[in-house]
Amino acid sequence: MGYRIVVAGATGNVGREVLAILAEREFPIAELAAVASSRSQGEEIEIGDTGRTVKCQNIENFDWAGWDMAIFAIGSDATAIHAPRAAAAGCTVIDNSSLYRMDPDVPLIVPEVNPDAIDGYTAKNIIANPNCSTAQMVVALKPLHDAAGVKRVIVSTYQSVSGAGKAGMDELWNQTRQIFVGDEKDVQKFTKQIAFNVIPHIDKFLDDGSTKEEWKMVVETKKILDPKVKVTATCVRVPVFVGHSESVNVEFDKELSAEQAQDILREAPGVMLVDKREDGGYVTPVECVGDYATFVSRVRDDSTVDNGLAFWCVSDNLRKGAALNAVQIAELLGRRHLKKG
Image (tube, rainbow, N blue to C red; front, top):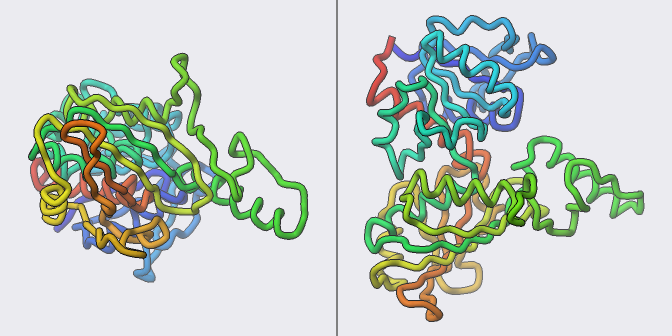
């Protein structure tokens, strides 16, 4: 007994992670389909480390009727075409793109934070997965918000190149090699050299001087956590292959000490507190790769404001920031609304 599930964009970084996590978490699957563009039709895709493969089908002529859920990782343009088709055929779409996140008729879900919001999925038969940087931050903020009320958040992100897809990872690899051998640096995916550099620019610039990535963190946090929370973000691309990091400063409505926050985070779902206050007593992005948790370190009081705290937050962006959260949504949807076939 299980669900008939489709992974759309199965040949990409996130799609492959989805397949791996479905296997790791022993998601109850009666039948599995992998779909992507016509270029990938017929390709055999490995399902994690199981030794099994699934043959990729062409999304253009895929029949969505009879399938229970589809996890989409194909970008906004393709999602705009295929998600409504799938949803209309009765297949609930869990979408990783930004297309539906701010649609009032589409729930934006992080299961550890706002699971009850999933009940609104029937309006369009679509559920949105948040931005990778937002997802890990709200997992850490939620238990603190419940305890003391988050009033204001200032966050600076240090986002890995895998957030820009395979092309971003390839560019970091190629530029690093080019620098070492003395070749001319090839800049294509990013606006400036990414190897041995940081770029304070992710996505398009908006009229107010912020970038769309920064805007996403603001509006998505409000939708997921609390519309009253004030957020300002600076999003930076760094020469790391996988794993997003964040420096988070929080002002609360009520007093909350660093020690109290540590006790709360230690027990919070989805959070792993590693905060030894000694050399190496914190988590870096290299160490979080392949893990499910959102790691929190360096929790400390901020004496510049009343009721202020600062902390460091790290997570595998291909997992909690995308594939893992999508699979957790599928698990939540199954528990609350769908019957196994």
